[in-house]
Length: 154
Image (tube, rainbow, N blue to C red):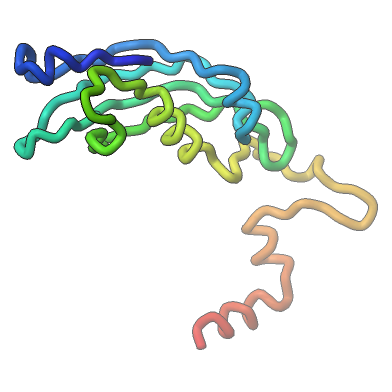
């Protein structure tokens, strides 16, 4: 997503508005823990601050498909990211445009959850000699829970 900055540099405009849908390449997505991205929308602006530095101020919203931490099913994780970043350092001298896609991608990847689940009933996740427990079950079924809590206090 290349943004032309000539009007900003020549002070014709005080800000450049951004209101676009974004599509990321499958090559980028394959290199992450994200299965796919849908409905990614970018709203915001690029402007000069009081020090005459370029600031990217956008909100990125969309749907991220990730694997459920427990069931490994593909589930949707909605994200909403606020990015306010000085982009002056990224620009080379006499460069009149900037590709903000790498900045957006970097922030989306950071937003990807390490663990995320929509599973409510853990009882169906068990096997021969093992089963998944909820936090409440760990506290109630563990004879060493009180001992662990006292150990944490010390």
